[in-house]
Image 1: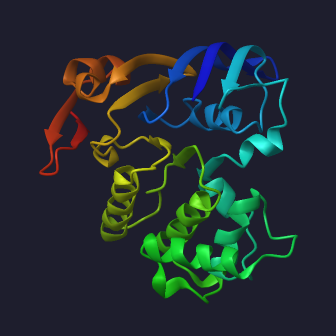
Image 2: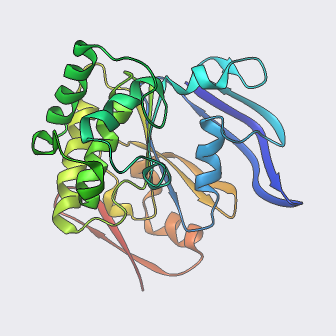
Length: 257
């Protein structure tokens, strides 16, 4: 699916990512756990081709950076991010936002077919957004916007789906509804490979059975989620004493001791 090989990224002589080695295979789902400033956003921008490695080799969907068309590559990657939310046009209807995902563009600049619009509405319905059809994006709540962005990310039938802190800004109930939608996507027979970025361990669903821990631009741990979400590993990762509490759905919450 993609592979980082000794990847470094520097900006203004400051190292943001250091010696990243990470391979994700098709149909694997990974969580990315890191604190603010750990380099998570930079890592995702590299995957999407919005940034270029300072050194090392990056291959995404079989394409080597420097030997492929990045705009075409992005059409096979679904990306849900608050950074994207700020770029979308508030006056467009929810289904128009979803439809723009087919072209990996901000806005629609070509004639669309009735079938394409029907698919956009179906994806909204499948993601739990039937009530959002016909509503301008600007009036939607944060939770409703996340539903639209997930439907948009699925519009082009992506091979890779990146969920960049999708629960950020959601209340308790909106977060639970969103996580349930993500769980259902993972259960689909043709589900894409998914990455789930967070700094809250309790948001990591069982379907994300692989994880990397990112701190100060370095991958400190990577492997099976069930092995790494332990008190010993997380105390080493956070470099502070922590307490783990297992929640009824099997997820794990982490608190300072």
